[in-house]
Image (cartoon, rainbow, N blue to C red; front, side, top):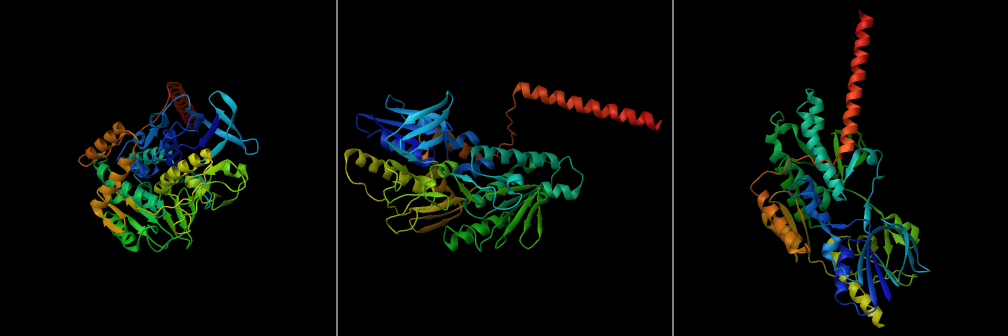
Length: 447
């Protein structure tokens, strides 16, 4: 059988498999490989940080999205090696290491958060790239609030309550808006904390927010954030991150215990192992999404540097373009199977949008700028429509409707097993006994 293997279960990979699955001719086996059993709706991660939705609502199980038949299969595993000459993959999955032959291999592996842009970033900054990142940030915020109530040092309370966001692009603006709205909504659950002790600051190196959108919408986003109490510092370049906060290029220290970093991406390590030509961390492909010099290899989505036939520019790494590229590649793969010529990818953006908190957003749809609650509704309607199942759409819609009238959830989610909990208790008791014994010994010496 002809075997098509798709690696990566993000927007690009899952949409490609869904587009292919209903049209594949007989004699073709389709396999999706991913090291996670779900796909993450990354644009909704800031909402998970702000508890507008639960973390499990921004992910969709792969097996729920795709048909499971004898000619369609999903393998949960990671790719360790690609032999493009023999057309064979080496996979590590739950049963060990296996080899998988292919006729066509599609890379839809996305990219990774980059943590080496400045000193101290990897050790002290919190990235927002995965649902695990979103849950960790949310738990960190709740722990900071709980600790503020126990502290008497005013300077320390201010540092604990100061949340610094590096980057004023889509992710930075969205997480800052969600975070300030979340803090204002749940502050009454912490009566020993005053509103003045909770602060969100955005540090952005450019002269305006959201450079991907028109200047008018960038200004609208700036006004919305500042109106709700977010401190936005434009043309401000971060130099390093430490446990005390962010040091700027000017030498100024912006004090804060929690630093969120939304800038920079790095290539998936698999691209380096392939040895294919890359630019800006993305693998270079032809207009039809094939990789030059490697027959049977294709790439799509954020990991690919895709020329847009409509304007000659590289396609932006956004969900909208990933979905369109996936559907176009499905057509090209079917053409290849039939021996027909492929066609170059071309797509005109239908618009871009950002949700910047509760009932606040900015959007540009078909050239029409939108701001405020209308842009917020358009943003939510679009991403709700992208959910692959009606059941999940209904759950998210209900959660959004609930959030319009009630404050966000303040549950600090921890996944601690019984054995780990008991070991931790024994360690704490042992430390307490050791301190008590030492204190008794010191008292005896003094006596």
